[in-house]
Structures are given as C-alpha cells and as structure tokens.
Length: 356
Image 1 (tube, rainbow, N blue to C red):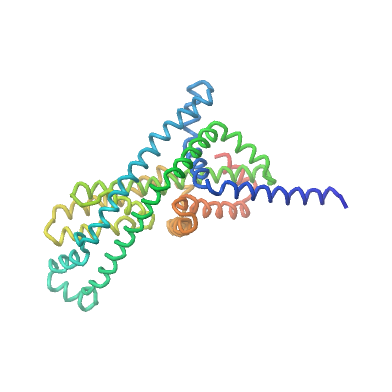
Image 2 (cartoon, helix red, strand yellow):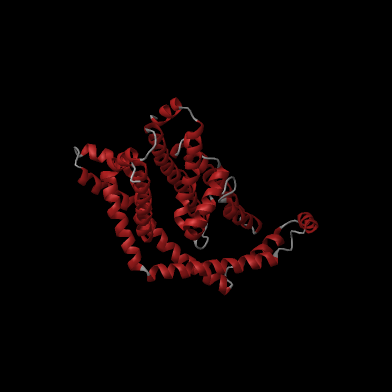
C-alpha cells in the first residue's frame, strides 16, 4: 500500500495544509506583507540601479532604497492622512452646525437660474430636490462621523499600527535584497512548464506595477490637482475634497467631475463667474486630461485594462479587502485575463511576451 503515488498524494496534502496554516499565521499582518511585496516590486528597478552604482553592495543598496521609499511614499502619505483626519472632523462638525448646508446651496443655484430654465426643470420634476439634498447632507454627516470614529480608533491602536509598519519595512528590506532570488525559487517550485511560470510571474509583476502607477498614482494626481484648485479658490477642506476626487477618479469618464462640476455650477450661478470659468477650465484641461496623459506614460498601452473592468474589480476588491482592494482587485482581474490568455495562446506567443 505504501506506493510512490500514495506517498506523493500524502506529501502534497501535507504541503497544502502547512501552506494554509502558514497563511493563517500571517493573516494578522496581511496588510504589512502585501504592501511590502507591492513596494518591493515598485522599487526593484531603483534598487538595481543603486546596487550597480554601489558595485554590488546589496545591503547598502537595499537600505538606501528603503530610505528613498520612506521619503517618497510613506512620509507624504502619513502627512496627508493626518491632515485628512483633521479636515474630516471639521467638515462633520460644520455640517452638524449648519455651516455647510447643501439645501441652501441648491436654493441659491435655483434662484440664479433664468425663468425659462426653472419652468423646464419644473416640468421634469427636478426643481424640488430639497428632500434628496437633506438626505445627502445627513448621509455626509454620518459618513464623516464614521471616518472620524475610525480615525480615532486608528489613533487608539497606535501600537498595532507601529508593529505592522515595522514588519512592513523589515520585510521590504529583505524583499528588495533577495526578491529576485525568491522569485526564481518560486518559479522553479511551481509545477508548471517553465515558459508558463515565467509568463505568469512576469505578468503578475507587471500588473502590480501597472495597477499602482496607473490607478493609484493617477488618482493621486487628479486628487492633488482638484485639491489645489479648491485651495486656490478658498474652498474649505481642500484636502478632504481632493481625497474624494482621488477616489472618484476610479470611475470612468466622469470621476472627479462629480465633485468639481457642482462647485463650478454653484460659483457660476452665484455671480463668481471668473472663479467658475477658471474651475471649469482647470477641471477639463488639467484634471480631466491628466488620466489620458499620465496613464499611457505610467502604464503603457499593453497593460491597460478596460475602464469598466478597473471600476468593477476595484469596487469588488475594496468591498472584500478594504483599502488594500485598490491593488488586489485589479490585480486579480488582470491575472484572470492572463490565465485565460495562457490557456488560449500558443507556446511561441508566450515566449515572445515573457521576453519583453
């Protein structure tokens, strides 16, 4: 009964069980491990250049890349997050106090409209939206309160955050230094044909880089442009609205316009024509076109997924994995496409694509 085939089955079963147990062991630090891997993939080209200039000193090159990552990514994100928490709390309090009243803003817009347009809106039933705006205001207040509560919870769990941060930076150092050797070991261990494995790992690395650069960085650019415009116009909580525009920029075609367009309409209808026209021009020429300019430069045409697939996979990823879903969702969708491409492609096509 102790045949080689039975031994292999038992070994594979034990391998699967110990792998699942190891994953369960890392579950509390999933975010730290995930972002360490993501940042390692993003900064690996920089690490290789630094390592070459340091004549192969891997430890020193990894440390220098780690410090560069800290300055470029982590510190600015921490600064924006702290500012966002402060502004969310302020916006929530102003909505509760009535200083921010969407119903009053809507009424001001209606008052400034010509009579023929008001009659047309009345026939369409669009001039009586006060109830909807009241619910919108209450929903924003409730959402802001939830964000403020979560921000307070993050502050209370500072120790857990610091532990995860230290683990992420520690893993990032070793993934930068030994990442290519680990990838080679994984490639040799996967029981697939060599060309298939090389294609899938190459696609995974490309997709992660493309997702971060093509979605996150473009969203940050649009949010920064929108927040800068709001700050220049003196609109309260510019950082908060910039973050909202960054999140909405994931929606194809409209995106950040859901925030800046109503503000532009309000400015135009209340007599601030110059500010309104300026915001429209900035929104169309700077915010709107930034996606068309930046995405091809950062991603490339070959790795760009359809907008609808990015939208659905991002929303689904966030609903399952929280903030990490910004990257996980589109990555899973892209790997789904890659596996089906692997199923349909010929061997020669895979060799050519993996060598690119």
